Image (tube, rainbow, N blue to C red):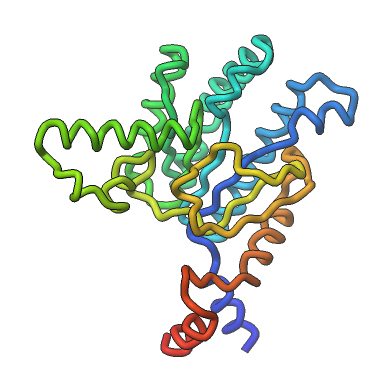
Length: 253
């Protein structure tokens, strides 16, 4: 009976988890360390969370690594972040590939160095046939920009006569966004105590369940992730329906 309950619980796990990894700087400050040390420790937390999602058969994990607004940070910090990004990718791509993880990047790559753009492309190519966890890294990404670029593509099709304005619907717009081939996030997590989504996956988070925690990102562990998932499992996802309709549909299943 206990085993059956565990299987049932697992079947309701989120398929796609999206995370804003907040609190690296404050973590370092609390320890009287340079801010950059917080980012280094944050990479270790990423590894733990990827391992958790892989072990729990989560289909997709999307991490907000660098927003389009983060360019406003001090130049030295941004430069070190870019170096850390490149170095981590170099070290981890083989390990990710061995674990059958597929890596994808979303965001505007043109702002990054040619070397980084090539690494991103090579990493995607190296893992494109993997069938395990899909790890999506949002880098130089912004939700407003994502939607804007999608609408520009749609407008171009209208201009060329390939579409009528009346043809435009949610499905068509979704197909032009950054991750059209993946399920929309079931669970959104933000660390560090802030309670906002900061221009992250604005379209895709429409029906996502939110979980906010005061824990700073470098302290994130498998237990932290499990707490967030357990919180998610207490929610009833209605998608506009009544509670009774949802319960009846579960009984029919």
